[in-house]
Length: 490
Image (cartoon, rainbow, N blue to C red; front, side, top):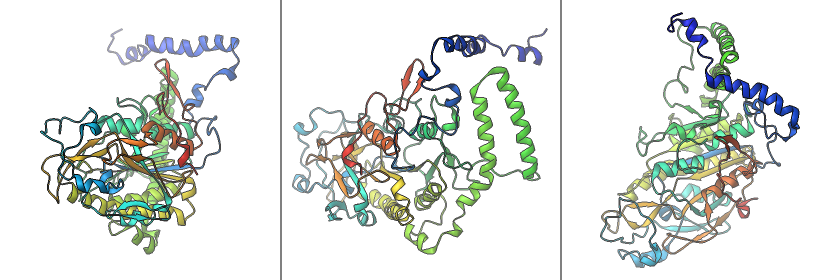
C-alpha cells in the first residue's frame, strides 16, 4: 500500500511514542497498582486534567478567592512614587558612592557612562493615612486609600533586563517555558464560573496604542501544563475574543450541532492517539460556546451607575483603557474569574522621566484607587487580592543628561516597591526599608519568590505543595525558593 494513502497515514499514527505511552499507562500502571496503595500517588492523570482544580486544594482555609494583578510593564520608578529619599536633594549631581553600588551589576545602557550622577526626585512627598505612609504627589487618589494597602518597599529580583525579569516574576523562572501564575491557579484551584475562563488577561492602551516593551503570550501561558489553563486575552476592539461571534448565516442551534459533531470526532481521535491536548481542545470549544453569551454581558457596562463610572475616571467608557480594564476586572471578579491580569506598558523611562511618569500616573492613579474602593463597598475586597507593581525598579543615578527638571533612570532590580490589598493582606502598613539611595535593602527583603509564596498563601495554597511533575522533577511557581511574608498577613 502506498505510504501516502490516507488509510496508511492513519495507521502510521501508532508511533513508538504512542505505543510505549499507552503501555506505560496500561500494563505498567496496572502492575504497579497491584503492588502499591493508590493513596500513595500524589495525583492521577484524571485529576491533572480536571478543570475543577485539584481535589487536595486548598491546603487550608483561604482568605482570598481570586486575584486581580495590575502589572506596570516597564518598571515604574519607586523613587518618584513611593520610596521617599529627602537626603538625596543634597546629593544632586554628585556621583553614586562605590560603597553603595558595591560592584553590583548594571545594564549596558549606562555601563559606558563616565559617571553616575545622583538625580533626586523632583516630586513632592507627603505622609498619608493613619500610619503616615509617604506617597508622591503623582498619586493623589492612591494616597487617599493608602490605609487599605500594604506597601512593600523591598521587593527584589536577580533579573536586570525586561524580558527575563517579567518572565521571572510571572512564572518563577527567567527562562521561558514555565506556567504563569494564573495558569498555576487555574490548574490548582479551578474555576468559580462555568461560563467564563478561569484566567483572563486585559491589555491597556496608552494614548490609543500600546508601545513599550513587548508582552509575549508565554507571560500568561500554561507552559508544560495543559493549554486549558492558559490565560484568555480579551481584545478592546471588535469581538473581545476572536471568532467568538457566529458567522453570518450560522445560528446558535447550528453552532451547537457542529460542536457536538466535532466533539465526537475529537473523542474518536483521542481514543486513537491518547493525546491529552485533544481533551483540552474539546473543553476550549465548549467554553467558547458558553462565552458567546457571557462575554457580551460582561463587557456591556450600561448597567453600571454614573457614580461608579465617575469613580474610575473620564476614560472608563473607552474600551481598552486602563480605567475601563480596572472596571472590567471588577466585573470579572464578580462573575467568579479566578485570576485577572491587567497589563499597562510604557513605564520604561530611561529619559524624560518626569514628563512620562506624570502621564502614566495620571492614567493609573484614579482607576487603581477606584478599583479598591469599588471592591470594598461591594464587600468583595475581603476575598479579592489586588497586587500592583512592575518587574523591577529604577536607579537613583541618572541615565543621560541631568538637569534640575529632567532626568532618566536605568533598570534597578535590588529594591523596588509593590503594593498588595484585600484578601488576607494586612492593611495600612509599609513593609521594609531601603538605604538613603534606594539602592539596597536594609530591612526585611522580599524576593519575588517570597511575593508569589505570599500570594498563594492568601489563596489557601502551600506554595511548596502545588507542584507538577515534568521531565523527571516536581516544578512549582516558586521553584525551590520562597518564604511567606507573614508580617503583611491580616
